[in-house]
Length: 599
Image (cartoon, rainbow, N blue to C red; front, side, top):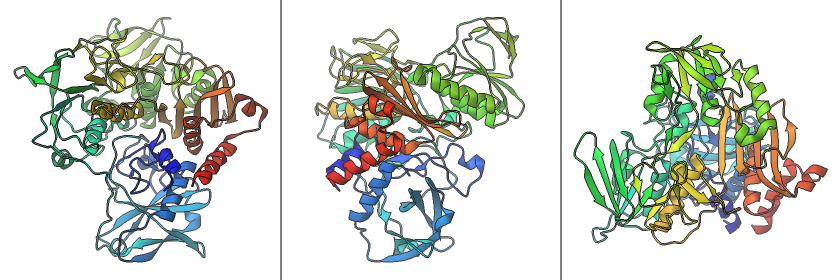
């Protein structure tokens, strides 16, 4: 496989495992590329929040390259008919069962640009999640040769799979285990994706010392992004790794443990498990990836029952109890978490109103022009938007029954969900610099200058932007995961600066939003290509003659291509976009041409 393709898959664009459908693009690639898409042949409820294999341009390149060069390690192949070609929707993915009844497995059929790709898959149809992230790596999968004959899609599948007699071979990067002779202790504070990515990377890099993850959670690391889209999801269904995996690689987890103090200079962590006695741990390196605490409103009535935040599976389950048709639900917050909660509640039949300080949804992330398109979407879907508004107080005796705004208007409420972002969970940290919001200030290697043995990742990490050098803190799953990996390598002395391009995503009323880059100060300098009112467009955020960021709605392959082109410094000039010399289709072709040149 050419190095350029490996860079596409490993560098800035590699959304990883989406459980259960998410698997790898190829057994030789550590971090595959994915995109969200509709799974045909399923109910609307099943489709909601379901993410599948990438059908985007770069994913097609990866799969095609893998199909051409990867040989299957099996003794024989069997040609299997998977269905009529015209039954597979463009830019969509479908599971197809193969093998005898009672001993079936599944493959995934992907169609993009009238080409078909087939990959191995062993997902349970009862489990689903929704994030396209470069998160902790998973076992690899094979891709199979495809041919369309007389309008039917055929794939050459290993006989043991086609006949139900075996399982596919998995490809996983080699991982070390605990070496009794290695006395080093690496502590990971937090039980989310960043800590897991760090733990896995440490073992992949050959670390044989003790790895101890300390977390308040009673669950194993799971995909937290699911719960704003599916309140009823189970942590076990969206777990990133099974319990025996942690045992196999000697990764210790202290559940329901609260860190009371981290002495960065003394290299010691104090913690309690439950209500037990405080214990201490001396460490050689520590990663603080303790995430964020939901922002709360400090106004009269804020402690009434019926006012919730969403951070844990237990929070989601509590909200789900009230998420019934006709219930009056108030969401406070107009960015990602608030908007996703509003979308989920509305799709459950609730009467939903959103209160936000911004004039339009996502104003601070996408700007007013794109935000206005989402405001129209909310109106279309029956969600009331109260922009440029603030809560004066919550009404009710013991339980909230209304929300009064600053202008005096009162909104009836059966439940209130506050989705106004998070604050870094760092109150226990001492001996290192924090920013005004509580973020841990680190350098390019993600460690503290004052205490180099302390590293940070995720919501707590304030790091220097590779482009501007100014300190930024980004609260997104993908960034947290990438920082966990980079921090782990630097804990081992690899000296790898964090330079990953920020990527994030959302899904509202089945409209897929993707954003690549970072441009909070130029959101008003935007070029729109496509149908803004129809919610299918590309927006380019510009500074001088440079594209700083790209947002797409229902054009996922374009966002994938733009992210990679930005990483390579191959994006077009703003003047080219304004003159119409370059558009999204040309950008897709440009990336394909670059790959062809380097193949």
